[in-house]
Image (cartoon, rainbow, N blue to C red; front, top):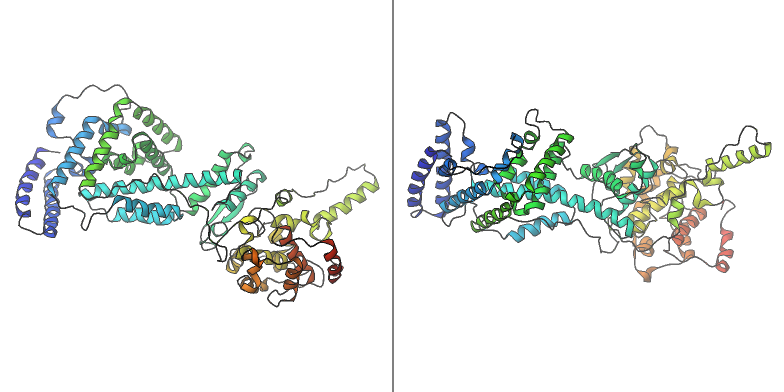
Length: 594
């Protein structure tokens, strides 16, 4: 800061403080801000060397006298423009910065520059933390943008808003890391989790090496289908497809980054690691230091001063050097100076806060009578082994094999290609394996939900024995609209791709047009109480089978499909298995197709 500025500022301050006594609080605020802006404009017009940064609180300078004093020799370390900000973290520089800011706070007397009543920092912390707990990260980005938009120039309010932005930015990435880590943990402990369905899906995709398209609405409740879609590509390396935590994290993280609009460029990655480094070394309050914002805002040029398009290797090298430098004891005072700055801002009526405790959502506890609520009530011990079965692919015999071996191969291959109709062990057939896979309607997290009931009816009465199910694994739908939107993804496909009319025989007539009726049925209490109600609403296998067959709310569901659907829920533990004595007389109702 130049001597000319100090002289003008002191004269303006004396004149202004005399006028504050005779004016109201609002007029005082307006006079103060107007005077500050006028002073800065005067200096800018006179200073041909463009020293506007000296007047900005974000780069608070040393007093003139301190600049003339001889500074102690620093040990050798990074000295290029990449690391010039380290000078501002020295004890002398930080102390001068805090003195300067304290002087500016004093100029406002007892009137806070931020208009309106002061806000309790804990209230802001709770409000913002609530966004993370409800996984509303999009609201966090919107709040960050609002802080940037409302941030005035050359004003103490700028300092606090910058700290807010860095807090939100760091907390958002902390939320992401916690979500990914807990998603992996839920696979190991088999505990409920809001990302469990997606975690199971990733866990099955990794070893298979298959790429696919993932829609956020299929795994996260409350999102509109088709709005947030991620094309997941399987890793090429075999080692990257092994079942390890690091591989799981590398697969899941970019999906959440895309779905929740996290920035993904190299300099944004460097920002995240740098802020984490500062918080771990000095605490969250250090994010309110002006120099930290300077580095955050100019991160690209800090890492790559010439090109300003840093590469990942250059960013890693820069971060390594910064980490090594900041671990030296001469920077221990940064923590103390951060505490003092935090206290100064709090006394002035500002609202610095700490978001270290922001955590993702805990598993829901409400009853599953609503459309988008999931409550696991039953575990399926036998089904994971069935779902993980790779199939019954037959091995082609050698050329010198006997006629009998070749004939056996022909029959086995015929069964393998049409396992839904030919394989006696239908739980190993293609459709059944697909519907018992990750995220299916009979898994615990979907079993007692409306969308699970709807998806089960769609499977048995529409998509059974279709490429839509067996090849592409489309088995779980949040609503009829979601089912329709999923079908639209497969353009130029014929109707049989989604629904084989004769899936159960030549006399059946399945159709996708029945999905709307199934969706309405899934919401009728008389039709869903046995599944979504309490233990007192449980029914028997025979009554459930009779309901499916006789009720007009279940179109296209005759004796065979009704029996299979009821059997699915008996295997899942929703209804009790019928005894052999009770079952034999009822089996005559089935046709020979059963």
